[in-house]
Length: 452
Ligand code: ADP
Ligand code: ASP
Ligand code: MG
Image (cartoon, rainbow, N blue to C red; front, side, top):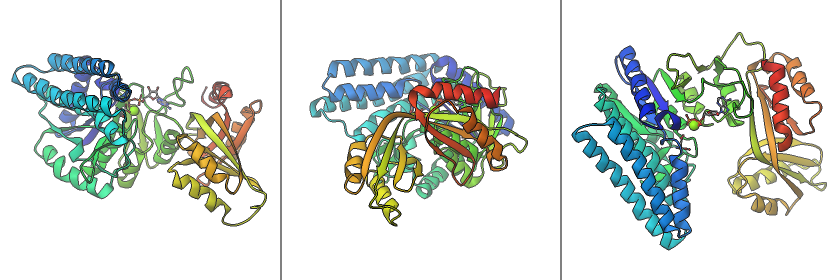
């Protein structure tokens, strides 16, 4: 039994949802049961909802209401095309329950003029709640018996709203009691991804792109044999197709390689997706919902034993580099602890670290608390900040055995000023920090060298 997660473009409109139905039907025929289905919001809807909340918070009530109306129309139109008979009336009413809730919230926000992360989550979650309702009804109407499951009853998270972390034990218990019986009863459970609720029952979300994570959590919770991520590209590509014109398909890679690539910017998977899969050793497959018969990318514990070169490249833009220098602290123990305590206090993850005798350089992706971090670090060190830098990461298990590949990576970039270079203990990636302006060229050069 497999879990299918469909991304925003794979549920964007009735045409896409009809493709989804055939993919689910085929899996069901093949496996004799399942699959469990996790869906994103229809493409653009999460952005739309966040826009509605922002407008409401600025008291632009008319604008917020008219955008809400557009969101409603889009879902009602899809429901009308996909579902017939009395089920259509029921579905329309369900859509309106969510839209009415949204309308009440934006009216309140426009008076309060303040949008808290907790409220933002209630608004953002509506996209997945709506799409999952539609998909569940559309499957049933097409002869695939499906049951909608409220993701807020299935994924239990901490209270870090807008990027909450699921609580493993509680979530597994809920999945076992809410989702398994539906599968055992021969129906297809359909859940919205991205969405959960705190222990206290407040709606939460897992961070942008978080539906992949939900898919993997469900896969682990129901002991799936495979977690399939259905998206709009052929699989994991050797580089971001928005940066490199014709990247190659990576047909097989290891969990560890995939984790590095997605952590360092390969948006095709949410960075946490791999965790639940690794814990239970469940293979993850990335597939193109426009080409259901293609093999896609298979991610497993072993990866591809026969590969000789790098596996892929990834990059992150708008990274901030912070240099922390202290001659007084020269070689003193406890210095790094003090440095990292500051990042911990402001809940900011550090991506990359390099050190010299008197200085430490780190990169961070999340720049929300930079000013406070700099202020705190300045109490015991000199601090300088460079914004709009990029991080470029070359990944491959092969780096562990073939040292000349690392030399080639740096050699190819000889004309590019590199601000930081690192290879960590896993020896699975080489990461460099460079100016944003140099990124496209550096990517081109590396891709040409290793993937052409
Ligand atoms: P979904 O809505 O299906 O979750 P996303 O937009 O989140 O889809 O992720 C798929 C997109 O990820 C692709 O359209 C592609 O532009 C981007 N992407 C970036 N890096 C990679 C990569 N290395 N391999 C594949 N896709 C990538
Ligand atoms: N709809 C959410 C987003 O746009 C989650 C997802 O699609 O994975 O970020
Ligand atoms: Mg995604």
